[in-house]
Image 1 (tube, rainbow, N blue to C red):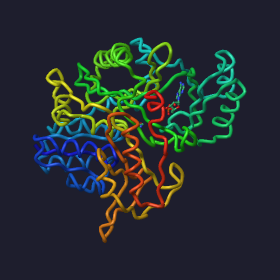
Image 2 (tube, rainbow, N blue to C red):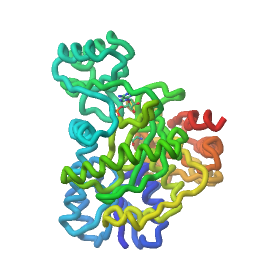
Image 3 (cartoon, helix red, strand yellow):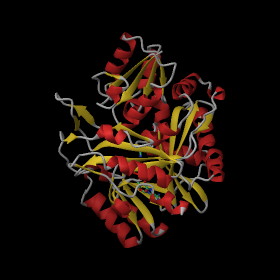
Image 4 (cartoon, helix red, strand yellow):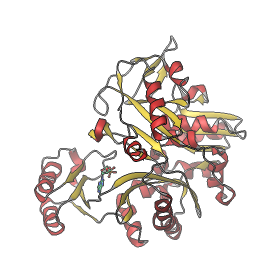
Length: 426
Ligand code: AMP
Ligand code: GLY
């Protein structure tokens, strides 16, 4: 069959890499793709948020199946539009994607179906926010509404910090107009994990768990990013916790979405805090995590295309996912300056040598090939150096051995990806 993957990041490179290995895939396109994806798919110069052009391309090129990577086209209704054109697609409808797109929809749903999550309230007026802070008492988490990727999230240990956060966000407008509304949440204490389930509208099949590293610098310091590294499986998600996540989070949400007339299909990504009282939901995403998708795809032994198709066709009961033994870890290499300002266009050398390290696959997130055939950096997060190993420590050693073969003075990475799991391995 002819498959189109939408997106151009490390997540989409990993998806293309895995889909290209399926005997069912005769021809693979990716829009817009990147220089790494071009090694396994034909890249099409249409941006991932140009829904109309993507649907036209799929219609005019006989695409049988579209796999949507990022959330933006999903919340904009690309799957509905593709269905309208008679084309199968992996991902939720716009109505189902509200679980990521609207925090109030998500929180109301969790309340209605009794899914554990942090208490929260929304305020558009600083004095009322401060009264709530006094009533609830710190620790609390204060968030400027409508900002993604952890920007504008302030963890407040005492009431004074919480008052100061309200002044910064609402009065001084440190994050601009998104400070017109603040969300105040109960502080959840524990270790975070990313949990993914494939969903076909009725049933869910869990993937192995993962954990990412959100902050820019070693020791979990510095500003939040889209993710500087990840590994799977995450030891914090024991078999017992995984069962609890399925029973208390994933299953009720899928049943709830179906009851609300918005059956969920695609991958459901739960960002969780594993607390002493069990797993609690921080957020939902309607897509694979990036970079988590990169180690996940290298661990999957089963045919990914068959599994994604089964989601779209409502036939997940036919799917039994098999995984390789051991674990996988990705180190993200980003352009210096990320997540703030950075220059584009620096040349990256040594990728072939990096890919020769045992167990290593280098996924591209933001690269272009220049006229001389050199890879150049075109984004914040640029490479995902991914390695499998028997242990997280082995996967980490392999990933950094590959990183050290990459000659890119303008890039940087964290040197401690996987530290929590490695501490547990002892
Ligand atoms: P968000 O952008 O809302 O996903 O939040 C970004 C990060 O802030 C999360 O990944 C957590 O590390 C932290 N965080 C958010 N909400 C809470 C909470 N209620 N309790 C503890 N940490 C939180
Ligand atoms: N790695 C976090 C995310 O994909 O949102």
